[in-house]
Image 1 (cartoon, one colour):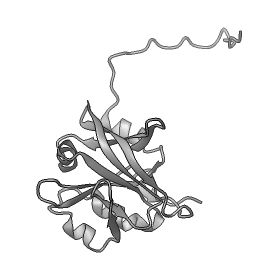
Image 2 (cartoon, rainbow, N blue to C red):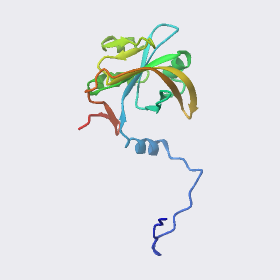
Image 3 (tube, helix red, strand yellow):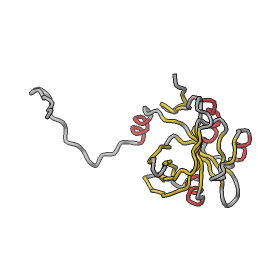
Image 4 (cartoon, rainbow, N blue to C red):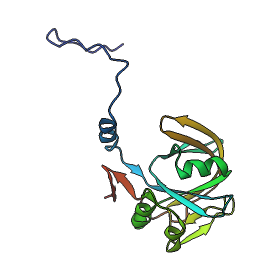
Length: 184
């Protein structure tokens, strides 16, 4: 059994403060040090037939069997509302060439996504009916399994209905320190 030696001059560790919370600024600065892939979450609105998208860096795999993924969306946002009503949705993992597209879908307060999709090359997913971005590193189509309230966000757990890798040699778009970055 290994125990680390502690010198007699070492100060004792302070008692933990269990009820302290990091400020939003501290939290944002700390997590800004974590590089994340950039994806575009899309859904076909079942009520008005409009296609809607949202740039996300909080998308991850959860399970291989069954194949599950998770995306975090702001509570009470348009995407949160749509994902509560729509059974299926899709995610396109964006490459370096999609930087402008990612920026457009990250804008707050936009009225319609119709114009944002107008000059983007995409195909409608056969399982979700949602847009899949041409040239994406990978695409997945999902069916919502569970919605989990988490602070000011909703975690949406989705079962993967289809997964494709249309651009296996493409380089990923990465978000790091509040900006889009390229590898290498």
